[in-house]
Length: 325
Image (cartoon, rainbow, N blue to C red; front, side):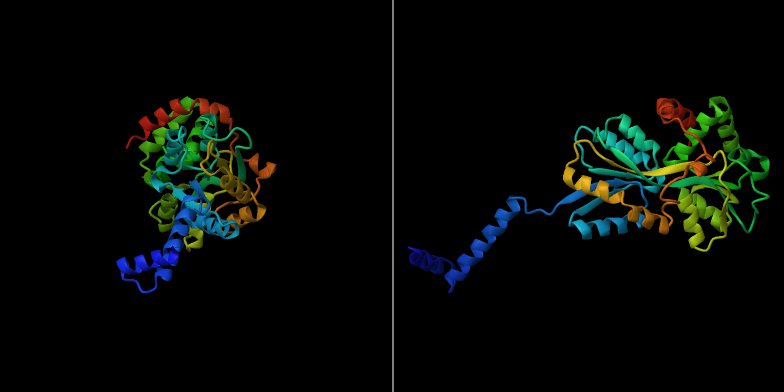
C-alpha cells in the first residue's frame, strides 16, 4: 500500500524521491504538533520604572541563567512611575504583567492598597536611593547654597532652580511627603512661592540634573542616581548633605495577583532580591546602597505611608492646581 502511495505522490507532484517528500511532510507535522503542545519558550512580563540602562543587563543575565525570556515594559521619563501604576490598576481584572519592579516605595504601596499584588509575599525592598538638592560647583559652593528645600523660594534663587514636574515620579512622592511633614497650609504656601520664583520645571529628574550640570540652573532637585550619572559624565555637580527634608527611596519588586506566568514571576522575584544583584546596581550607582541603616534613615524624612495614601487624592488635586501646565 505504501508503494502505491509513493507512486501516486510521485505522479501527481512530479517528485522523484517520494520517500523524501513524505519525510519532509512528517517533519513539518511534528513541528506543528510541538508548536501546538507548548513548545513556546517560557517568559515573564515585567513592568519597570527602573532606568533601562540599569535594568537591561539584569534582565539579560536572568535570561541566560534561567532560560526565561524577559518582556520588559518601561515607563517614560515624563510620566515616571505614575503611567505604569495607572496601567496596572486598569489591567487588574485581566493582568498582562507578572512583576512590577519599581524604583520607589510609595506607588508600590498604592498598588498594594488597590489589590493589584498577590496577598502573601507580595513585595520586597531591594536597596535605596535618596532625593536631595544638587548644585553646580563651578557656580556655587556648599556654604553659599540653600540649606533646605524651604530656602529655594528666596528671591536670590529666582529662575535658578531646576526640578521635574511634580505630578509624576519621585518628585511627586517627595512633595507629598513634604506636605505631610510641614502641614497642608505651610506646604501650599511653599509650593506657590516656589512657582512664583520661576523654577525650570522639566520632564524628569535626569533632565533637572543635566540642567545643573550644564550651568543652566544653579540648584536642582533630583535622585541620587541622576546626580551620580552627571558626575560620571564629568559634570561639576555636588549633592548637598542629607537633611531632615531628604527622602530615602526604597527600590521594590512585587508580583501581580493573577500573573499570567506565576512560576516565572516567582523566579524573577527571588532573583532580583539576591545580594549580588543589589550590589551590581550599587556599583553602577543605580542604587545608593544595598541596605539603609537606621542611623542614616533617621536623618531624613519620616513617612506615615497609610496617611499619605489616605490623603493622596486631595494632595494631588492641590498640587495639580498649583503646578498647572
